[in-house]
Length: 407
Image 1 (cartoon, rainbow, N blue to C red):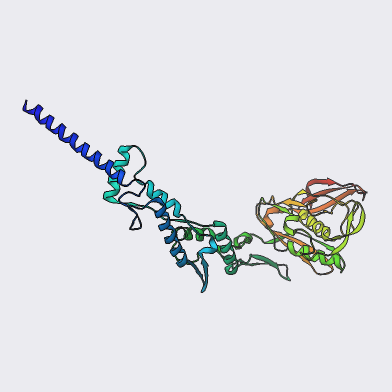
Image 2: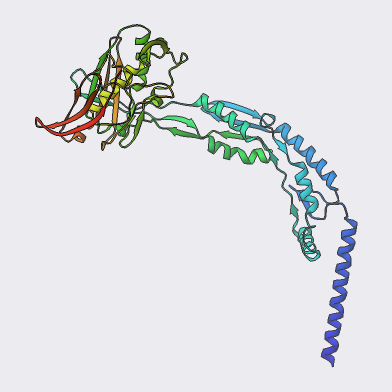
């Protein structure tokens, strides 16, 4: 009997406590209706008792003060760049912070709300106050800075001496701004509307042609020369030839003449000169460039490289035998080949005002002791071209390449 009475007393006491607590929470909820609950703060500043509108006003004023003092300072090698917040369209998220503060402790069921409110009252609830910014504006600013601190790399190179020996010139790495790392470093201070003083992270800017890319280059695998005259056509030839000089074609990689030489335009320095269109000579920008592609075509055939896209002219050319020309035209006709050899090859190209010479440098062992020559059979209007591989004075392979039909 005594035990039952004790249970009854405990149950009544618990009911009274729950009733008092529920009543207190209800009274607390009623008194805070439309206002931020107790314990809610932002960076140590209490927001308790504010309406959502008042909280937004508070955050708006706080944002203005922070933006007025916020400057992003970037440094590199003694140079300093200062970027004011307004140039990055930094926008404090005052409305978002105020809404989050008002909703703190008001989500979920009544029991969940009560538990959250007690927790917030005891431990506090901190509301983050952040800003947004225009990442594209920051990217543009960093790209401007990147141009001013860029140190260009120097490609490794090969040279042929007067005695025919090949010398190697090591490549040199440059430096460039690590834009991706800089964006990450600036994200937090910009969103938190804090000043930042950052040493810009620099990354290595390696050359395309590295020293090790040319280590095995020890011989001229193929060389070809054609002749031309001074004038506008010759000037065009010189420009295009220069674009070929120093080009590396890695083992297994492909080469596109149009991609490497670029579009033939007046802005690129090209002039009007005679070009062949449907068998007729007419003035055109970049006239003469086909002689460069044709010279290259012959050189790569002698070096054992594989043509993958090549077209002849409408009529035979004067600067090379029938069947051995390779015409090109911007965005229409390209000359392409690939390097099937085990090692990289390297182009040396020169135009001295009288002749074009293209040399393909590579690894002598890749030709397996074979000598390559070109054989043309048939008439000048319909020539068939073969590539001949010889070893010890004997023909070991005769490769058919193509048959052209000229008008």
